[in-house]
Length: 273
Ligand code: MF3
Ligand code: CO
Image 1 (cartoon, rainbow, N blue to C red):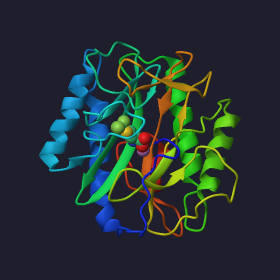
Image 2: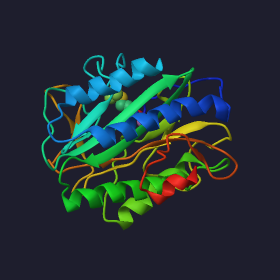
Image 3: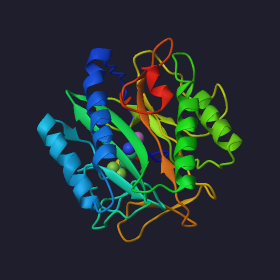
Image 4: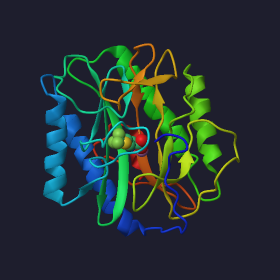
């Protein structure tokens, strides 16, 4: 989400773990499925149609299709963000066939039984470029560094600082406009969870709260610009490829619950659930 555009809720309305789990498990299962099936030759509109079919089958509700924030030119109109290569965030599905070696980020949020989960996964389509696999690994490593700071009593600045520190250690710079966010009954709630910041600064986390951590990295720049062709897709300013990773977490007094953890994820950190 973008800084300053979040929706604030006056009263904290916190789910129990049992209430929060179904949305997270559904989002994780759809991203795992798409990772398995999407391949060279798929059209981005087919990726969206497949995600939409699974939403209908599950009786879930898309958070994206009617989403029309101030930074979007029109309602989003699709159920998943498909960001390809220099498309980094908010990639709007369009008539484009995936080619060998494309770098694809899939960002997906739905409501199930009254609660939202939001997660993003980046994949290489067909024969991967080694540099893209490294970029995906680095982005996930940076995300997990942020997730390590998610616990009751810590602040969003602790998360942002950890994300920034890990990213800079790997040679990346950080964009300060976009970041993670609270999740609840709706997709974007307070607090904003920056990908930068000072330890101890900002809102304090409480047990039961749902938040996302979602860094995105581009090797050569941190700057984005909107694709004027669709008014939505955020492109790297220099045309370099970007990767994005996101999980929805429930805060506890100890390690967070990774609600959108994929059980078949090769990442060892998926065991944190
Ligand atoms: N998951 C994205 C985020 O948190 C939401 C993208 S909004 C959409 O920023 F409208 F592009 F779908
Ligand atoms: Co998000």
